[in-house]
Image (cartoon, rainbow, N blue to C red; front, side, top):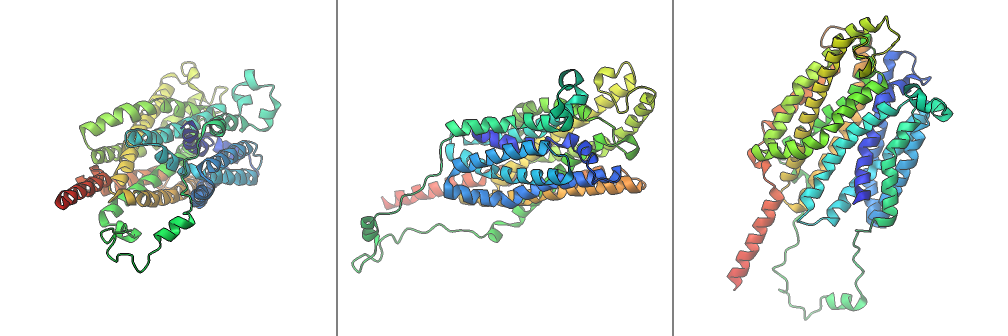
Length: 494
């Protein structure tokens, strides 16, 4: 189980660890001619990871069916470890793009980890084990970004500790990649010694079994006539209007999430004249680290209590309603940040300092900025957990049977993966355009945030069209109905 959890945790950590320092990293490459172009190239780097991951995900599954789950997972973990460290050695945009793309390819086997988790679980613990997946995703997304912000450029951030480390002076983003890869390395070691093969291969039938199973002229024609082959539904027949609305709601939500994941670090790192906060990578890391502390509490305590009191659908709708005002409000913090920057312009700090300099410089104003920012980030995390945990449950609930559950989740995975490709590059391009043109509201630096609020509003409106039946696990209902029919037939035969 530890190796599986490491695979699941490695994906969000690798996806988000670079986001706090990506702005500074891209700005240091020769490819950038002016600061306004940085978000576009940063979006390309983020998109390359998701694009390559999406393109190879199916082939990892096919490979696991051929050579087994264990070797497939170990190959992915080993490749993930190597390419992630190589990304930390980036000194050019080309190197960063190639290593980032390769890293996405090797983390494409997260679907294999889910398969193994289902195979090793049983009816008594499957719901509890599957609940670990969204928890690990949320923890990995926030913790990865926090590590990236706190550990990037350690020679400058922590001169007393790393001032003499020449390797970190040459490669300022190697340390966070090394620390972030610790989870992958741990999973690889555990997998080598503890992970068992879960793929069960049926042995080929012997010649005697084949001969005995062959029909002859004396074989009764009506033998087994009451056995019906399982009916396979086509994908189009599965996509009823209600299921299309569920999947569309999920897709819109994922587009907003992918854009936000890219947007917040760029917004926080951008100068206040461009509508950002002017934070250093350390400041970005601190804001995300504080937010990550509450993720397990929200996921394991707050959300289950809300579901028990209300319903899964109501929790999804409530989470989306929380996100709408948060996205509208976040960009207005730039006004306060610009005011603080004017106060700090006479000091030695070129960018907004970390909290230990509040009292000596901007005092009340800087404290207010951080209080407002953390409040909005915590509200966003609450809305995110409620909305996405609920929609994942709803997608599984609307599958007509256990036999179609994999297909429904596969359609969802493919659709949302494309949103993770479109979102980062779209957010980067829109932010670059809005900063360059500096038009009136909402086409100024607020543009991306307004779009995020509108996407959340669309998802909320779509969720209002869903029936209350999405709160019920339909595959379980179908299984119970089939069991009841079987019992009735047995009683009638007797």
